[in-house]
Length: 270
Image 1 (cartoon, helix red, strand yellow):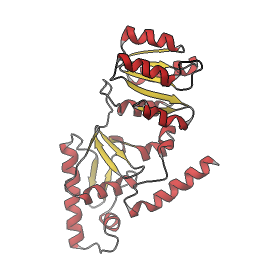
Image 2 (cartoon, one colour):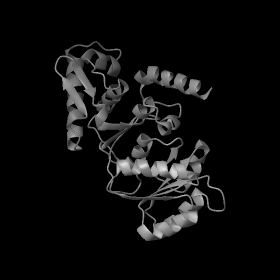
Image 3 (tube, one colour):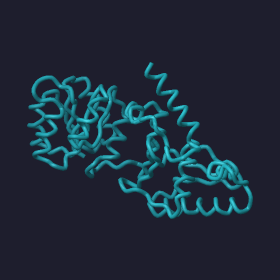
């Protein structure tokens, strides 16, 4: 991968280059504090991803620079760097791949590289991406993952909500069918949806997402997925900004976690 970082603070440029060289040691990573120099560098080594500071002084801030760069390369991935979330709208108007909130972290940069709008050479170690903020959605790469049953998706959401903990049959039945007993009928239905989960992930090339310990329970392997909720729990600034007050909004069982996120978010803003 070829990346170009542009920020009027050389310290930020140096930090980004250090992070990118760790994440992609075989790539070419260049950086500058001068937007005009950035245009020259882009013509020289043709980056496929540009990290641009939106608030640079002078007539050419990151948004203007991004438009110039896109004229030469319409498939350039542009990731906006900013210290203020209000630039998100402008980033999307630029058709940016995403944006990074300062202070920058290696985890946040790695996430942006894993969800690029246009294909690059750096791939996420996990092909499964899970979105909890808003409605619950699951992707294999950038394609929505289709399950045979809607209850299979709800079962996965319940496992995600338990953050890797092994869930017993009784726990999962209480999550999926809170008004029904854990009898032979509900346990048979649960086995059907567990099988569908495993088959769907296996077909997507990710057979190890779900793990099962006989007579103990089933869980989700956190290392096999990229999840906005998990990055939020790890303190990732970009994930914290992505929380919009909604969490798995289609599922009632998520209400306890939803309330905890609201409490944490309101205390952080005080």
